[in-house]
Length: 482
Image: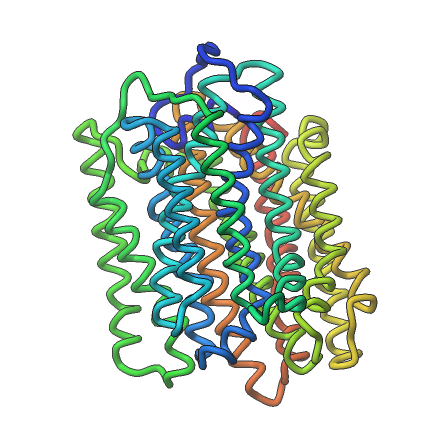
């Protein structure tokens, strides 16, 4: 799988490489930490959203865009960033991305208006998309065997930790209110960390390039970005604006945009170029099933993390710290599976994902009961059991998903497949904030109230989790790796 991940950033078939330059532990740590910051930034912001809305007078739709715009930028530029690194040098792109991410974090921290914050978040996401693929490519080009496997395990744990502990860190920073910074500390903390990371990367990380660079599908990336904007912008802004005509026109325009993207990808592949989303890979049964599972998981997960922060700090009157601490049991369950998931995957294959869906569904069902019966008299302790169960189940789904799917894809196409899965992951996290967030906000503003709306979201995720179990069984029987 590690060779496949490296190929995901280049679009080329996976192939083993010998270690030409040693990658020292301190250099590897610098790489992993560089990738950790962009992943953390997606989740750490959720718990600060109510404070941002109050300070910058932002609407609920604009708060959704604070999350979604970042995800769109990462999703559309992830593969582009990887191919630029192959051509111009991975260390160079890593440094450029990390510097850009650090500068944009500062601009986010001092943003005087919601408009400035949104623009900075888009550029911050683009910078993050330049960082992440260089980490995967550098690891797989310089390490082999057990060293590479250990490095990729570290990368996986970093991703799990970012998702699990991001909102907790955000709650701590907002609640501490150091120097009266409030929510701005969530962004400002990246600045000194980023400066240290840049200084360490300059000295420690060796430069590598691909032996044969692939052309960048800029047209494909532009069409994907256009499609996502046409879909997500009206979904986030339509409800608070009363669904004006332009929102429906944008949604209608999504269809021709998808058709144009598909036609361009088909023509690019037929002409021998490297499309952003290769149609031949999408025709593989395991990939289609894997994408369906990824869409279901990451859309609901991204949406839940968004609405949970709003609900706990709304009618439940939790502080940002209490809202973050409510996620601590989920973080613990998630972190445990991030560490032990690869070992369990070897034993159970796709059966591990089936178990994860069921456990996750139980956790969200118990959370729905708690929201219906206890709301708004809830606190981190009262929500601990359902959050622990949901976190454990979510980890069992997410950690092995890519490995199980790619284990059933031919080796010559596994690299492209992993690139598609990584892109879909970022896309669906942003989609979740838009769709699940809009549904929650609509229900919360009605007779349902925030507790009823949270329960409805939790029950919907339970239903989707149970629906995905037979789909996962199809993956289990579609080839090896089960």
